[in-house]
Amino acid sequence: MNDDQLLRYSRHILLNQIGIDGQERLLGSHALVVGAGGLGSPAALYLAAAGVGHIALADGDRVDLTNLQRQILHTPATLGEPKVESGRQMLRHFNAEVEITAIDRRVGGDALGVLVARADVVLDCSDNFPTRHAINRACVRYGKPLVSGAAIRFDGQVSVFDFRDPASPCYACLFPESTEPSEERCAVMGIFAPVTGIIGTIQAAETLKLLAGVGESLSGRLLILDALGMRLREVRIRKDPSCAVCRKTETTQTI
Image (cartoon, rainbow, N blue to C red; front, top):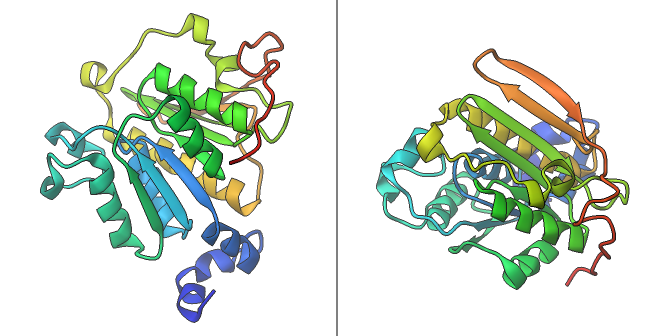
């Protein structure tokens, strides 16, 4: 690190658990954020501010006026622009040293696999079950830690699925693909703006801990937020021995 970086990240460096070594790990890390909306906005902002060296931001949508109530990556000046371009501008405004890759499409299939394989950690900040399951399958295949978040109305949830540990459950152990819950979208159900900020910020915290190699992650635990009563509760998640996704999947080497 140069002198400016030592000063910029000094409050992290002062933490015994992180120090110079941990901050250097962050600077050399690559995070994939799928979704540049309510969850992806605060998550990506904190990753950039904390100095994660490379952030790949994937989203196929454009900035809409209804987004501005909670999606803090975007401003009235970027209405109509691709969310990833709007997000790239904002992230570079916060930290020009971070490399931002903007992926202006809904990722899936082989293309998603390539992005996951290149990342050190993946943040699922999407808003639909097909995308969540596709991300989960790719992370299982390539053995990459997955930080998963969701938010609707006054409720939120977040967990970590760390596939570097063979005993880790996967997203499909919690929500099997064959029994997907009914889809709930913000456009229909509504969303209390700070819920996305709380959950997205927790996703950023879990990601930074994974990348720096500090603390205990939410692996094996689902954290559930009730913002209307401002209560948090925790549910244990166990690996499903009959899970169709992670039961017998062979991890593929990173490409």
